[in-house]
Figure 1: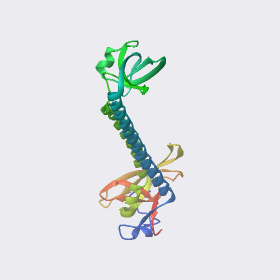
Figure 2: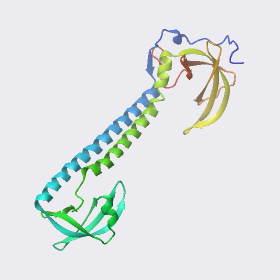
Figure 3: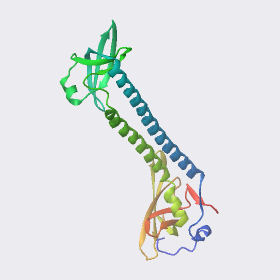
Figure 4: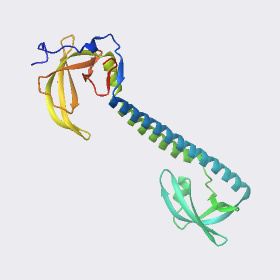
Length: 258
């Protein structure tokens, strides 16, 4: 049977003949996709909010430390123990006060970092009431350096979580629009190929249908069940862009009256 030949056994499903837009509801699978998408969005917002709040708290603590060190700090000499780069230029240093050893790390400018080497002396300022709190004398804590790290990380977390949410919703929203407003037509399966999608094994169904102007349009669907070539199926398509089409019925949405 060719896609253009008549098929007296095919009829438009009665529920699709109701006026547009048709009432649509989510199926169990559709609800699952939407819940997963909501979880991803909530996680993205939560991670971003937590990251920014942590940085605001760290910034407030750094500002308080700077004020205390300015008023009650003392200078001493430390020794560079490690130099490395990550999201910025970092120096680790060690120093001894009153017979106790201390070590700390800090972000410094690239010019200062390049001038140092392991074992180099490093002038630092420490808090006399708590000698473990210190910073390099020439490189006081810089909030801008931290924000330049925190904001991209928070943005990446938000981007990836929203991207995962969009992937979940892509299994629902296009089908919702087609069931609500799509035009129905007869399609014919032109090929059925065994394959896999993700972790699922099944069959790729290739089909073709005719538009009102006589032109042909194709589509593809992954199915758990095979169909014989030449089988007649119902397709829903967007009349303004027929390449947006799906076979009916769909797994994530259904007509509310069905």
